[in-house]
Length: 469
Ligand SMILES: *Cc1c(COP(=O)(O)O)cnc(C)c1O
Image (tube, rainbow, N blue to C red; front, side, top):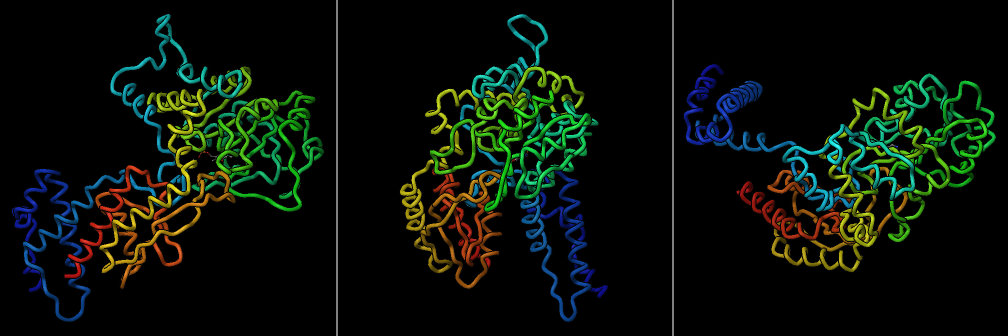
């Protein structure tokens, strides 16, 4: 065994190899040296656990392996992805892609200094919310607005500012958990408000709220169920009814509408998502929603409503911890500006464009991609397949959009291997496994990425062949 180890090249010897010398130039010395050490450790470990004959690769082969491994390691963790999952608001893939004007605005505002908290007209100190407040009020009919990091933060600060140490009444049918550790009871506990559950899972009546109101009550909270639906024998209380009851007792109603649609999604065939302005019309005192769900803007939590409560929220110490930066404000402001003209919104907001993409168009694109892949029959079967896209991001969970996919069935190797290969290629392609096939949904692949998608699959097959030889 000891003899075998002696055959391994030394760290210095490897660092002198042309391949790794070049890596030192492009990365840096200590990263490459650490990489070489840990690679050699792994190799020693492998050799000592292997029973029977072991052949040690030549120093040059080892250097090649290390160089390839380091190249993969050095690829940024955060990189662009081609979304073939069909999930339009995929939280793991960053939810909404931004509109061009939002991207341009981020660039313009972030490359230099900007009037984040200075009112350039007067030269006085201003509030950073001013850059988006006017637009938010105009588009929703609210009196005032605030913006924080995400809707979880919006919920936390609204509860903390308006009901700390007090009871907040919530229907048992609305105590939701959303992926990635958002559980309403936990958020409420963190805010310092006390959860007062009323009703049952499927039915909550107005009298349930009424009976729970006492001198400890701080607010009534309504929460959009988002990622689930209760069907059958059900009853929920409307915002209007809650507002009427709350105002009799001088209490505010907080409405967490979740996805935050600024236009009616019924035109895309998606029902049950009311527009944000409806909640304001119905009299909710504070309305909360995400900036990166149905609005299609940057990640943020938007708080709109009565001036008195917005002022309470703005002066809460948590505001400083949750405030958004200039890039978010720039992207949000540019995105909201598009909504002044709904027809512009439908063509310029990427998620709305994806939602309204005609099926026939998706079918043609899937067929074209399949034709371009027809020379790969040695590796896989490619076919256009009809399927369903999902909205995702906890929005409209039971509603599907009919779509067209490119389905890949690898010959003689697993779908998992294909998935890993496409993920790790030059462009990271992510699809979904369905019935032992790999589906790439054309609705979430941008039309400008079709050519790159074809190249990625071709390049995967090329690598596959090279490895087999
Ligand atoms: C998505 C969602 C949240 C969480 O919003 P984030 O912006 O992801 O923090 C909170 N409440 C509801 C009802 C939601 O749908």
